[in-house]
Length: 146
Image (cartoon, rainbow, N blue to C red; front, top):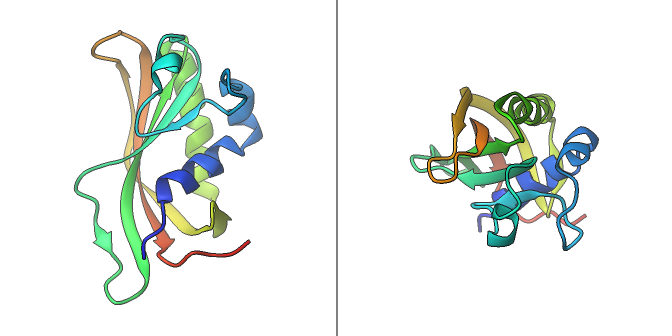
């Protein structure tokens, strides 16, 4: 059965010292690296450093008969300015680009390949600065005990 890759990617990114220094901790003491969307309380604190990891449609699918999952995650990096959001995005880029088979949240992440490079934008509703990149991943479908 496929594991929750989004949680694994959140743990991978939140565990990086450079990213953690930038995003800091939210009011619950957790790194500001969120899954799928920014929580309402965190959204009210913008613009500041934060990151959202979400699955994107059109993922390549499973690894055939192998118990592997291929998919795509989008990493959205927010910052006080577009330049600062870009700095956070580059930190995430380096983590994903150079990651070699790591286990996070009982998911074996094999590797990441860049699908769509950094795109600087502003949030359509609130106008917050952000940079997004999309990455294809390869992960084991089997839970890994740590």
